[in-house]
Amino acid sequence: MENVAKPIAVGLLGLGTVGSGVVKIIENHQDQLIHQVGCPVVVKKILVRDVYKERDVQVNTSLLTTRADEVINDPEIDVIIEVMGGIEETRRHLLQALQQGKHVVTANKDLMALYGSELLATATENGCDLFYEASVAGGIPILRSLVEGLASDRITKMMGIVNGTTNFILTKMCKYGMPYEQVLAEAQALGYAEADPSADVEGLDAARKMAILARLGFSMNIDLEDVQVKGITDITEEDLDYSKRLGYTMKLIGIAHRDGDKAEVSVQPTLLPDSHPLASVSDEYNAVYVYGEAVGETMFYGPGAGSLPTATAVVSDLVAVMKNMRLGVNGRSAVAPQYEKRLKSRSEIFSKYFVRIHVKDEVGAFAKITAIFAEQGVSFEKILQLPLKEKGLAEIVIVTHRASQQAYEDILQRLRDLEIVHQVKSSYRVEGNGN
Image 1 (spheres, helix red, strand yellow):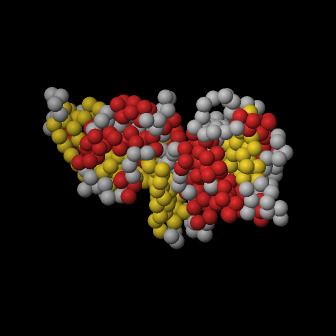
Image 2 (tube, rainbow, N blue to C red; image 1 turned 60 degrees about the vertical axis):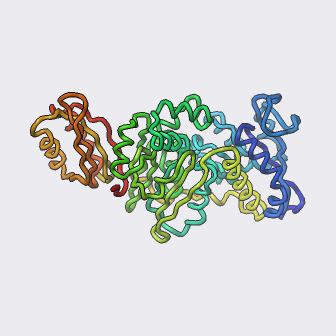
Image 3 (cartoon, rainbow, N blue to C red; image 1 turned 180 degrees about the vertical axis):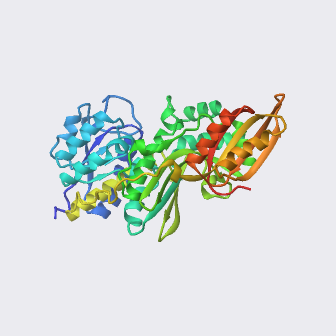
């Protein structure tokens, strides 16, 4: 075992919002870190783009460098913490660090969703730890809970709100009836949304996180392209109004569901009953529901982003690496997927659906629509039929009973082809029962 007094040296790649939080926590929690792992932690070198930039945290400029190799190749640095973002260049840095026997902690969900399998394999080959708790749901210890707390259980379903930006937008739209564009502008002004918000609002950010969760929870090599994705950009005030009327709340929900040896993973706007715990998760908060065969239902809730919540997850991973160093067991935590990847076909994915249709207001229109559903064996749970201001048109809102995705997509196509249907206005997945 190493000398108890010898500090563990850390190299930091990036000193933005999260990197600054990591430095603050390491400085302010030094007593706690020494108590937990028996030695101090020092940040020895930090990669930045601009050494002289004003920052939220006071750092001696002698620690800063614009050259990644000065951090990665430093023989005294034991652990690399990556909070710089990016994919290809960052991947090269982390592969180089692992090949040199350095442990890695990353908050980079984009990188882990795309190259997680390669990086974990490289870590194992070189006897290194690679931890990435902060890559999903910031301040919620969800990945560690799956790997350690629920290790003896068999996870069948994970369902949650894993993107704070879209949850903030939908909360404002639902509560105050504000249009999407206005709420997006407010989210950008508050720093919840990027100048280019497409990764959030198109569902890609949540899809990356669900790929990581499914890979761990199901012990299957789920890739990003295996996730069906639909964002929130087409949601209208009318959709939200009808959702409320029927007893539902609209959320962007990630779902990973396993039946037997087959899995499905998706991210899409979903109607949840107002009584569902996820329906009350507001603003930038995240929450993940986990269903296990033994434990039943558990829910993890907390801030999904921000400097200190995410930095807390990063430093928690650092503590895990340090404990492994003290015990001499680094590189043994990455477990290869146990199961071969098998994805459900569209005919094996079942859900309830909400659909809003504008039809010609004439005798027999509704009968023609119900006939199309009946031919696919899909029945109705709820129906609203309302006149529209536009002359000669009526609006029909339907919530179906459970149907296969294949059958439902066939119904949508046939509705669009039907002469009496003016437009299929919107369609969403439904979980559970509303009013």
